[in-house]
Image (tube, rainbow, N blue to C red; front, side, top):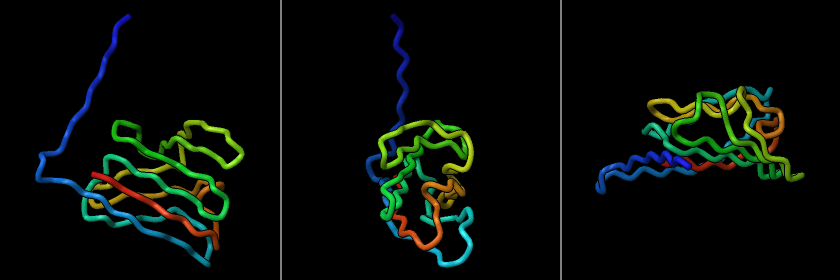
Length: 109
């Protein structure tokens, strides 16, 4: 059995964490969050439904590990989370990104 493992750490003096909330009362659409850094991990949770997405460094843009409140977990390959040099984009996944529903997020870089 072969094991391949990779990891990277930021220098001890560099640590970025940002948290926030987002809600829209207009048409739901993909949206950008500005954190001031490129995240290595992002989690977005719909507080109304309990549905959530997570993106980890190394995943493809617009992918996410999605878990719905009913318990199903799957990797989605579109409409997920895309890291940006200054933050991230939350795609228009219709379980997580819903009009008039509170989203909470955390990003770490």
